[in-house]
Length: 354
Image 1: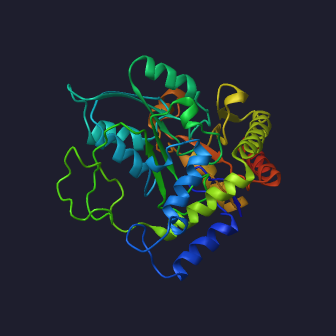
Image 2: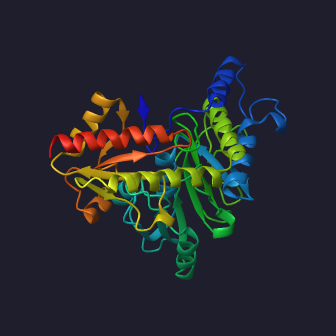
Image 3: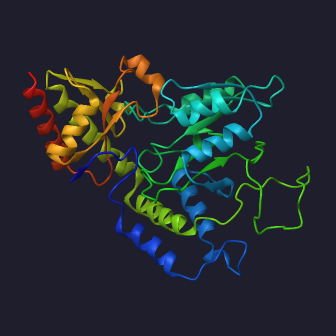
């Protein structure tokens, strides 16, 4: 089995991630702020600090956990008072659908937003976040960065770039379990919570007035999931996100060059090698993407993703809005042999219909 669908969920996970989840399930249940824990034993606090190192967030206490990027983006977009929001053409439906269905602009809204996708999950294009922040701030807008595809495999510099809001997921390049992720909101930005309930802090508060700061993590936390995410983040920190990015970019560029040599293959990738991330899309002339994916899975044991990848607007630009593309997505565990096997399989398939 060759797994090349890491933009959906990474696999395999580092052994340390599996071990951390198992250890958490085997241990006596505890909850932060609801048990007599020291700061040293507070897993969410440790994870916040590790993520602060990874994303360069000095105020890492402003990182809040939820079930993933979709959850985080909905909490942000539905919780903030905004009067205008621009989104990038490669935005995921986790941005587009809340904007179009759940929330609407308010004439007296407090903020103007610019939401950008750090790494396209269709072409792999990596955005220039520093420049996007400068442009957004010049217009008086906040910059919301969707880092679902980049967190863990592409360097992120929240403080240095001036990112106002960051949303990330745990189950992709951070190697955490499904159902983990979170978001960072710069101090001073007002974000009304979507959920209310027990937090373990001050249980006497029922009505949150101006004197009370909003609380964003309510209910029982997914501590086994967060334990796995902490192990995944530790793996990335030890390995080095820059080293991971170099490896995956080199592999993506090798794959692009190899597929480009096949005349029946149409590529959909970043406009320049320097901004290519670990995602490569293609089609084979004469075959629908779903058919290519089926053949790769069932005849060659290669798992990819086909379709629109929950990003419909960019497919209109690419001319692939009807059937989408075949998407290959890499991880730090992808080998050269995996990619060579893929190219050989694609060449076989293309030759069989020529």
